[in-house]
Length: 551
Ligand code: N01
Image (spheres, rainbow, N blue to C red):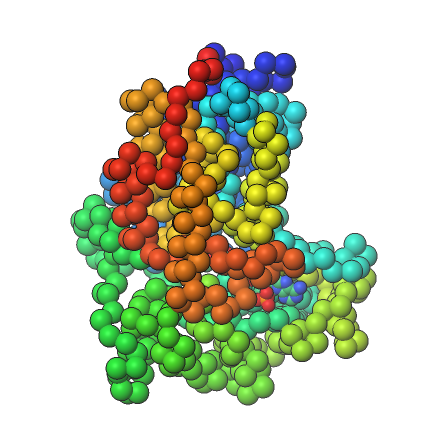
């Protein structure tokens, strides 16, 4: 029997059916779903609070770029009917409030262990069970393990020389102080212009005495057109909620309501394209824009029409032509890096207290006690530095845990040349370990919560099947895994995605193998495949019964 905490500091590890790593949106739903099957579950969370991404990323301006009415759990109609989102796009504090509400409403906290980082997970092949150890020195034994550790949860500060000597304060977007930061009157430097940088820059610019933005790669950004929630729209959406959620299953991004494009951008006249892009620009949002035509993510020529439209918008917004040209991305097709959504991003560069610095042509060489120096010897005096430099995406969180089997296999070794999974859900050689929205899953390219629910429901279905058939061990075959990895790569190679140096290919981490990690075949195709695998009796998986049982 498990002890009351689900953990044991003594010799005999506590026993669970399922140990869950992480208590963000994925871990919390896993608790709810698997506990509902009568399983003994417990989630271990490094943070001092629940919420994952939305617990850690508290930088100014942090908000979701998927609309609130979509970016929410679908598993309970009462929940989605009763919760009121105040704005079109949820802010970080609002989303964190929502997550805490869900935890209370469904009594999830009693199965969450906070302030506990899982440091190792070892599969005992003879016993057919995992032992997880934590940074508190505890151990827990579980038949199954669900990795819900997040895809963008390992913040990365580049290894700049001199950072320890900086006399001011520095911050990372993904490790923001809970008490907030007041930049009033300070000379601030922001390094990085991905989604995090693009969201925080307009707000920091309004506070700081002067803001230097250090840009290595210009990113495309579209206006979010955030606004207070339109009550009529909310009423209509809520009346259609169940049908909309079902319809989302048949879309590539897991969001219904965007009419499917029917023709190539190259079949339209220049004026028709201009009108179409302008309408989407005014509407706001990235999916709608990329869905203007069928081929924006597969044809360079088609994509160029959309890329150039946005570059022209930048040129029309930013008054200084040199700054505008630096901000206009030319090294990747629009949409092949995560498309940013902003509120007043390009306009910010018209402020007298904002300077854009091109660190592509003159890279940052070191942090100095008083600021930052480039390779060309230019010095920038700064009181505070913000690293909006991203994450060790998709594999970072799992690689930080020492995952191994008693046969001597380690996940770190197995993934040395890039992550290998079957359906993004499991790894051959590591039985009974499920991953929620891992590499090889479409998760990060979709409305994330829909993917989280779909993955977790699939895992629950698999565990129910095993229970029905008195099985206790599941693992993909090496052949199924290899075929899936090949499919993920083939689909990516049929698109423009691999052309960009993005975190999708690990390009932001020096030395990380360049492998395209998400599945870009669409949520709809992926879900059909997962459903078919389950219906076939779990084709590609080996399900067995092991003699030794966890008590
Ligand atoms: O990180 P990023 P992020 N010198 O990796 C630069 C999600 N998200 O935190 O492109 C100089 O995108 C780097 O330059 P380069 C979303 O999925 C969502 O912004 O590598 N610069 C880049 O500009 C997003 O995609 C939301 O050349 C350096 C930046 O730092 C993901 O999280 C909001 C550098 C990193 O950009 C990650 O976004 C926020 C160096 N040494 C995040 N190293 C919403 O829902 C790195 N950079 C809205």
